[in-house]
Length: 330
Image (cartoon, rainbow, N blue to C red; front, side):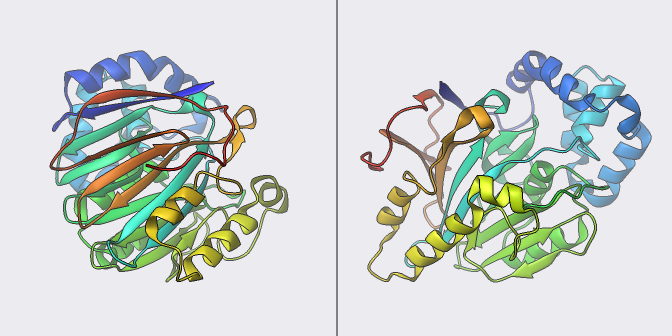
């Protein structure tokens, strides 16, 4: 089993995004219609919600709709308004001793991974890991703001946007953690998700977003898959969210641990998971250095690093099922 990541610098949506879309749309269409077409909002509602809550993204949205073929169903999917439920596991931490760095593991089923890191220049320069064709799982912008999502560990769902598009919006329109918090507090999210924010001034926050209650903000440097307390016992036990959170908190309290050592811990249990067949395996570890404007992508035995000043397009393929614990981040 392997994961493939393609690094692409395409400043505006164009031919390369269109080729990706043509290949993956049949799979996304199947996902989008998994609960029946009547379960999804219509085009007028989907578009109006995006225009109301994230108007700055409308030019990019319209261009993507054009590139996708201009169909009704494609436009509804791309709005990411009220998508079907989905979950992902994550461990993430804000490092603020020295260069502020957001470090995270993304745990998910490799079959449903977009496999793209994109450097775009829509409203701001943004480097991020793509999801749902134009959303972002984690990333940073040229102003020195980073954001990463994590499933919040609750079964509830409701009206709102898919979280990857919300993360995209934050990175496209905000420069600081304070600005990002304000945005996240007003945008509806369709499921329970947490967003860890960090900026180059070493400000950090976690925003707990839910469709059934107001967003709640905590000054916490660690984020896993519960929001302060466990509300879904079975999921928490399966993902070891409490243990991962406590493990990270203990590491950050240790003044003898430096950033390089912290990054290495992400490549070992309990943070590193190999439950790929159950949809909860670590697909990558990312470390966003906000003062340098670089991101280091790490797997056991392999590391690449790119940034705004030096973004090398490349294809990376990594074998996932291999022994962990002895490999170090370079």
